[in-house]
Image 1 (tube, rainbow, N blue to C red):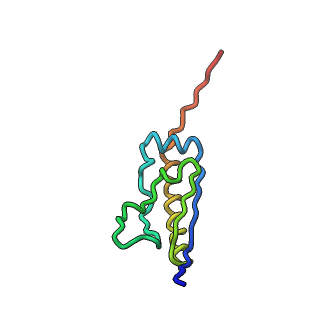
Image 2 (cartoon, rainbow, N blue to C red):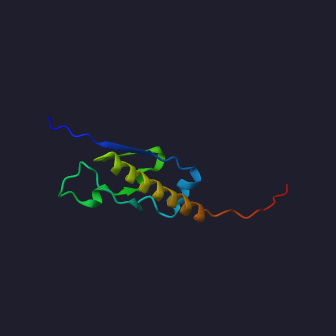
Image 3 (tube, one colour):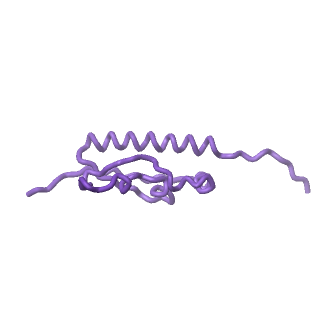
Length: 105
């Protein structure tokens, strides 16, 4: 009788081995990507409980997030994709390329 329909946004990110190593070396696994609050949250729940961290997405983990309606789901998806694009750019900027060298035997 009081059923409520919710929309779910599922996100799986596949990082390369090099990207994971950069995140670990820079101690970024516990860095916050976005603040969010699900449709199922109670009024007195702390906001820190719902933060999406980089660690939540590493190793192919799927993050599932419930929203109240399709419009909210689309806005959340756009926000998530922006945050992931920024993360990808940051990882690329901080990857240290090795110098070329020649080894003779």
